[in-house]
Image 1 (cartoon, rainbow, N blue to C red):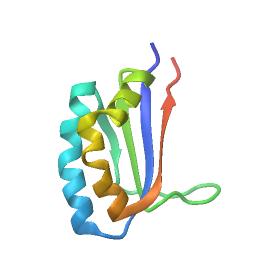
Image 2 (cartoon, helix red, strand yellow):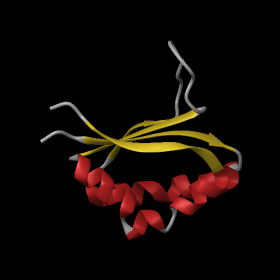
Image 3 (cartoon, rainbow, N blue to C red):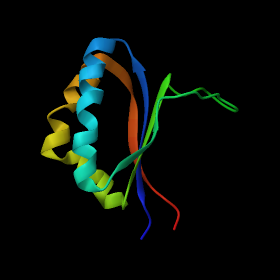
Image 4 (cartoon, rainbow, N blue to C red):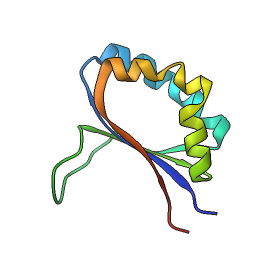
Length: 97
């Protein structure tokens, strides 16, 4: 079964509120078998438009698990913090087998 990935490109404009969000996110990811592969860090755009200043990549056991996590009560309880503190995009993608 192919893994699922959540990819987010984020531009934080309220670091204090965003820190409250990031402190809680790992606890919502773990029950769905997810793990952070990229959580900000150094990056460089090689082609095309650069993504937001913060890029996040979370790996899940499957595409379905990634969607379950995003739609879970636990994550939905905190996603408003991210949305209030930043702008950007997030999407789920199925990995290659």
